[in-house]
Length: 503
Ligand code: ADP
Ligand code: MG
Ligand code: ZN
Image (cartoon, rainbow, N blue to C red; front, side, top):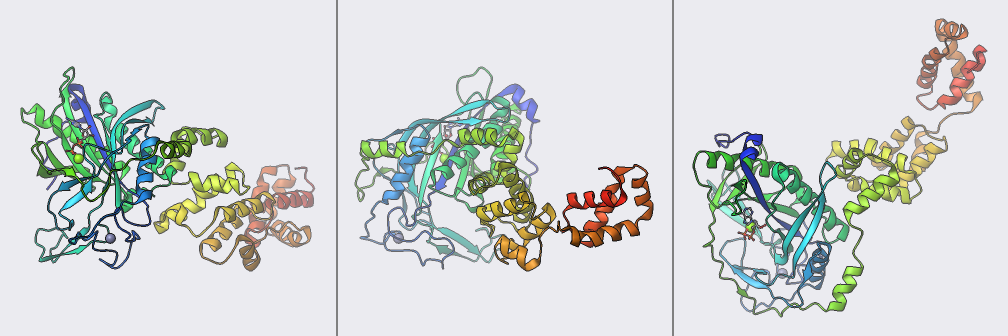
């Protein structure tokens, strides 16, 4: 259905046209309660069990603003180098949709809490690209509709719809960039890098988990093309609710190719919203959205203006964490890894677990090795994030310490990790219960060594004859009979000793 869209090859499109982008990112805050009432924001509850007259929009109900919501908005604004309004108001954005029982969304319009900022993002080649921020404003989420009875879960063909208002009123911050110009062929990369950096920033501020896969952060990608040298922007399309970093990049790329095809054929780009399709990276038309769209915004009469005291704002500024980009560079140097390796660690969500494991006493290399190896593999297989695995940094550090002390080798350590993940107990308990200690005691190893020599006479002769490298085969045989528990270095020494060869 979507593959019929005409596209121009990417390089060809960029040879003719200069892309301009605008990114609107919605972040769901991690507050315990909703933005304007005391209802819980916990996920997974029975539909409509977390509602009250205020978030259901019943007549006479009055909203009260969530202080943590405001605080989070200010922190985000400050981290984005924005000015913080001395005085601003909420506004009603009026429209009807069943998932919004009040028939208006409480949002901000011409008086956002934060404005005029920027975020520096690092591109793959190391270059820093500055994205200008127009505004960050506060608003609330809508409920969820579930269309039942149709084949696709869409409203078309459905027999009825169910509504769950548990999400209605959960605080959102919308962060809007100024038009991003000058990115050229790297526009899709800039879009992805910006959203990635913003996500890291939000997480560092501890105001949201910012999980795109859980819808806690979603991005609208506005894009237009203009001929090189022309100052006026072309007409934009707005691809809505893109929910992964990769999709942000693909959506921008696809729209560049699609716009170019339309423009090349003498057509006009419609100002419309579009839907992104994960399967093939395409977009399809949503609704026409011209500038005549009128939400009849007006200041919210039921809420007092927000006038954050300057002292409070300065206190929040003083408490801002180290910027993710700078922290990443610092850690990369501390750990002695390349940009590429650091990127892989970041993509795996392993930065914080590794930092925590080092804080528990492990050295950087082993902390990295276990989180990026055995643990990442398990997380992958079980569809969990690293920080969702039932293992603590302290336990990983303990395993690393056992390896460093020679009590475990890598193979045994993997079995210990497997035990911890299976809930068998602490590393020490598992070593004990499964009997996983490295055997380096000569008495215990001697018999296995003798057996290996006797069973591999030809190899033993080769070693005696001076081919010391062949000792690996005998060490392997001993490891096999001891089920991987022998101290390999000691085994090698013993074999060479027995055969009367210098190591
Ligand atoms: P809307 O409310 O319709 O989404 P906004 O002005 O809030 O409009 O946001 C539009 C986003 O698109 C902003 O990031 C803005 O910088 C950007 N933008 C505006 N005009 C263009 C254009 N012609 N091409 C690309 N991006 C644009
Ligand atoms: Mg928009
Ligand atoms: Zn409520």
